[in-house]
Image 1 (cartoon, one colour):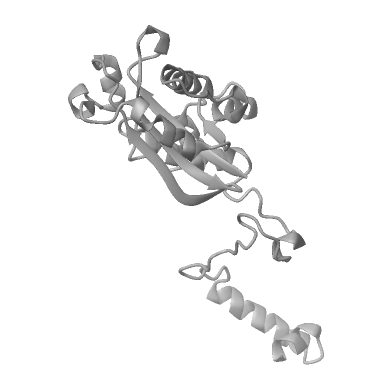
Image 2 (tube, rainbow, N blue to C red):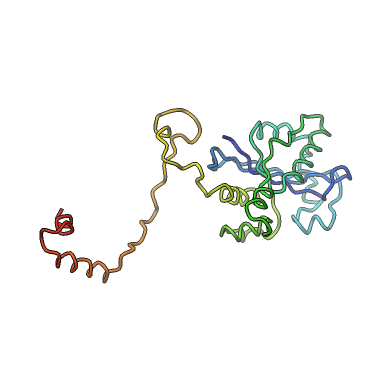
Length: 231
């Protein structure tokens, strides 16, 4: 199952009022595991940058002036996305802008059914609690200290961690399934856990180990504990 965790930055809130996309970021997942493949593109919006939008993402009109227009990157964007599920926080907003840009360049639009809204998932899972990306990072203990401004690729990377926690943990598909070792093809079927760079520290203190040894000795040489310890 291929998914693209995605985010956009824009000049405002309404494409029909002249607002445009200025940045797109995406992180590819395969069977809920990051593949390392990403998509990132700054875009010339062909208009001025409102101060309110600049305060959010820090992308100035001058910085974006030599970047490609959406019409120049739209086809490459569609090729990257393909038919993957688009995992987006507040998907209605981003899909509205993406489809407006695609429509203006005469390309196919993305169906709403292709998007999965993590904001809706969070609100259903934690009703009444804050569901912003920053709030979910705090809830799940995800480091978002680098997020001083909104950035499409950084926010996509953070959202990928949040999404995997929302659906049940960083490895939601890790189960005792014999089919995983049957040699069948498909993404992630040969996945194996990586060895720990450092072994976990011992959970038994020295005084506890000593007390246990004395206890086993007191049971006598014929006890199950003594026979096991002698092996």
